[in-house]
Length: 65
Length: 203
Image (cartoon, rainbow over all chains, first blue to last red; front, side, top):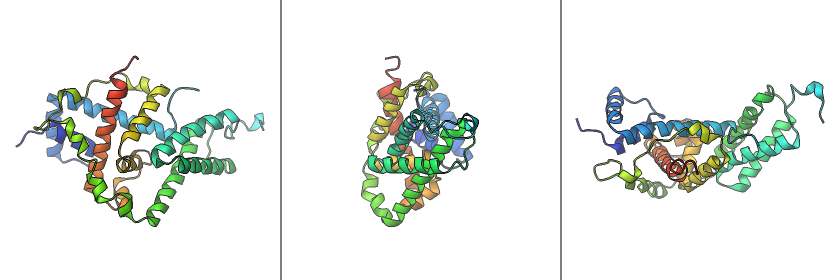
């Protein structure tokens, strides 16, 4: 099986929010991010983006004014 | 206007509250619509709808949530109405779709691995950033740097919380194209936030 590269991994990390990944996709993603600090950070950053847009939806942007 | 007895049950319609919430609503609407005039109209309509009906309002803590739900619904109606008027292909043309999709390939080398200078770094304490106005200014800027059709799909997904199937149908694009566009939006937004905010943290 071909090793997953960062380009594929970032695409799957995004699609994770849109569809259910196959077991095969999940496992190869897990193996890749375990070895790749950049992609492991990328996954966390996508969660940060999610949290940020959730704040925008609630009007919860910035401190007290 | 201030009736102490009604305080816990009525929305806070004092001038300062209106000014503050209007500002946050405008940020949301502009990000979604990319059209200041349309954004102002939506916010105005949402404010007026809220003021003339306290139905659904459940106390001061829920005020913002309630206001933003009204605004969201107004924007969704607006988008659905314009999708009916304008043929889908002119909203996201195929050629427009292809342009801008390749831009982010430069982040990776020929083997598809991160270029050393583009490899995502560790972000310290994003929660603390959320509390700063300056962070949201950078977020606005990064959102504005995304190509318009990419931002449109991304904000429909993340700000309006429409599901991918509806977005694709509304814009007349395939779900695979939708996934690719959302992926490009996340790549671009993340890259911009890292370069413009998280890398220079503690300025």
